[in-house]
Image (cartoon, one colour):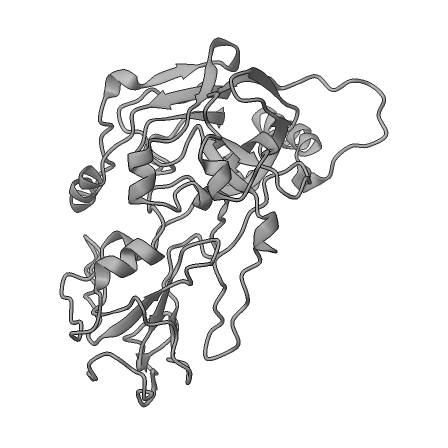
Length: 384
């Protein structure tokens, strides 16, 4: 009973400090910080990027952004091995490049503390809120949240990093929902972050309650020491996508490239340094930074299949492929062909559209499928 009372007290106290339970107002007493994080931004972080984005004098800020637990859709992780394109199709690799964001990227969920920043100068981010339950993974006995410090140009001046979503598709032929990204001229522009992708070196902010369950694959770091209780700063080298594929076949987590790079420190023992991203990395994935402001529509990695519309989508990039085979999945792979088309080039966030002639919204091999005749623009083979 005493243990239960302590847990309930912890939840009640935490509720006072998180936005999900409402913030206290009207108190004149100063708030004692829960933690303070020292951050140093490279003096060249805005060079080149501002001109590309049409920004003359960027209004730079750094926000502590808590990450979402999510899973990439199977097509982007394990594309079909059997490619069946007609001669005019640019192929599956073009769709992957144009429509799939980095499957191992940091995905934003909530922007918390946010301050103005000057390149080349150090600053202090003061945390007065605990992360909300929505961004924590685990139960009350062992749960953790991770955050990235994101440097961005606050182009609309609202003092917070604005998140976008890929276009949201409805089921069974209902109208699609437009992307809620606002006006492109006022989109915030991301310049860098302390945690961009698990395949790159990073520094992340962690908040831990209870013990640490290292079997939970939430932005995992196999072989590194766990985060400290309460707030801490973690550093690591990252891992390669080849290691991810090899580990997945063995149902294991990928190893870090360099375990000697693993570091754990309290906030007052570390400085989070945010440098300009490697141009070679950005040339391979031009939307890598923009995706740091892209939330996900479906965190479970579910693929939404759609009937082909009467009017052809943009087919400048497309592929006709089978269905992904997920390693370790004994349910088998659906037969037939799907048309995959990347999201529009001007969309803020990347995504892939999946069109099928036979099937259901969540399963091409469902028990009561739809069957539609191919429209005149349909570019793929007609298969049962």
